[in-house]
Length: 189
Length: 186
Image (tube, rainbow over the protein chains, first blue to last red):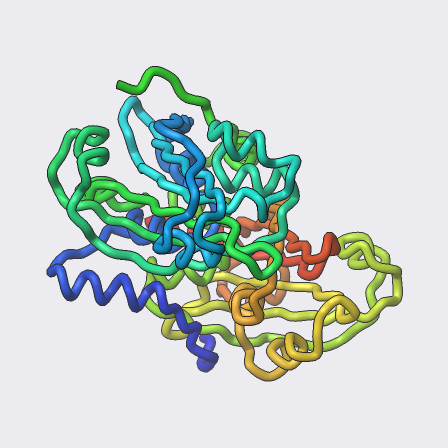
């Protein structure tokens, strides 16, 4: 019997509990894992559901407006790469991800792969040996926009999380991942 | 309409499948997730069990032998911090972790965290904003050590993974995590 020790504090765990209390819902363990892991979400989906695929939906460059500049911590007008992807498994969409990438802060040799959008971010970080850290900035529930309604064929609420990837103390990417609240509700075994 | 996509390769799943085939077992989804996550394992344990506790079993400095020097890519005889902890929930041991940290590669502040605050290594990395790459080196099943037999009160095989974290292209932490094969089945 281990009789003492230090409590391991976890702010994300607190945030999950807060949303559950506010919304009167109970997240499944699978949902909690997908919302709180710091590493690659595709690796988890792969373990849960077998082989998964990544589909590039849209990509383009655009100058950062004031809002984008603020959350990426770049100058307004700086060119940002915008990419939307969908992770697919078992023949259906699983997770939508929208990324804003400060390309000029990323390793030059990774630019083509980043713009191409066919490799998940976690894989790219590994491929190019990028030392980084992730900060999950928020977890929340929201109404779907037109894109999400069209992709997932549902009007139900979505669960989303925002996180940033930081390299050399600068944000290189901000990503939002979303899935319908009824997804991943089966418990893990 | 989505026309095409790219299949994502996952080498960790291949390692897991290999262990399952070698031992003729089926690992649970929870076990697989705990084996493949690159972030702190305590995050997942918190999600599954509510807030968990950390108990320090042993911590001391020692000179690296040939095996440890090879794991950390340091010179034999260089000093390391030896850190052995158990993560538990209400006294029930969940995961045993052993870490080797080359003391010459960490700052005084991190050393203070390691010695005094008794945080998990994952939390210390987060707390100090350290940018890393993380590589899962091995996933395997082994017999328990006497320490593990005493802690978990079982002789059963232990499901184990080894991973390393790099910072400034050097290994800063080598960690081994183990728990009885029957744990995290439901």
